[in-house]
Length: 378
Ligand code: PLP
Image (cartoon, rainbow, N blue to C red; front, side, top):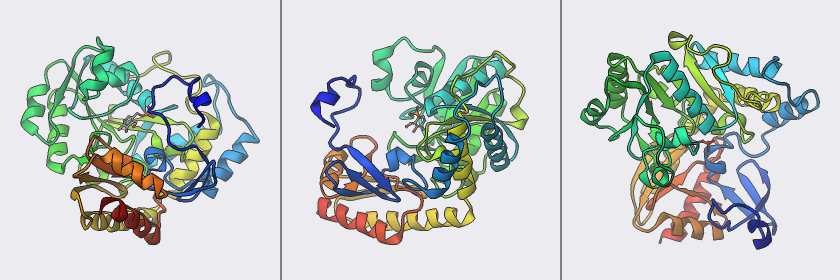
């Protein structure tokens, strides 16, 4: 992007190093025609790869029929998507919105009404979004503090520390909000005993258990929802990123057991449940079948094993194709050097390289990415 263009955008992002103009599968092309292997997928968004034919055809067909109708009326794709998500969850109702942070806002409001309690417990290092409610529940002081005062009644516990969670929960807690794997917070998986204790403790305190699967959901970790690997059934789940393969969408799912708190007028969104985005999302959900999920697990293992063998890499963590590697050097430096060599990677904190390629990535593409990282790190 030229300096002239950047000068008219509010500078909330660092200066961009590259402008992408085209994508196909796991590849991106920049404005100069240079090709890149995309191991970021737009921050774990483009799960089926760029221009995947199924969501592409579904979105095109819907564009040709109907782009928008108010939520005061129905559209077919929103209803179909809600059914598909309910089936995947095993019985849930959906509120459809446009982004992850909006899904979190819906969860915060829902939990207040359902429990009559405003308190929220979240985790240190968590990330739940940039709107003021989601930001209040984000366990990263540097992101929260410039905007204080935020929502009152939010307390933070340490990840995988049951005693710390017990201490943070109180009689005022209406929502326990957890990412099954802290994504922005360094790709740190929660362990199953911790999550199971969290579910029990939420129940004992009359709070809802909300899992933020905005980054981990829609097949990213090798199951449709990451919680399927952790032996819990949450009351609330938020989804966004991968749901429509890059079109803007978010969803709050409320388990049937926790249903009934929202009534007409309690919440809404002009664009939420947009028919084009929902049509694409239906195609994505249909594409996430057992074969693709097994592929995600296989490629994730290949990526983790390859990373662990590289010079300068410490702990390698993650599940499926959401993988973090602790580095001895600043991760941003490594990501910049990889970009020069035609590989897009992400960071998660100062020292963690985060890899989240499209779920359709092949063994050859994993090996090519590892070869670039080997060159950068040696
Ligand atoms: N929650 C998690 C776990 C996320 O990773 C993100 C985005 O990175 C969000 C919430 C916010 O989503 P969005 O950027 O779509 O508002």
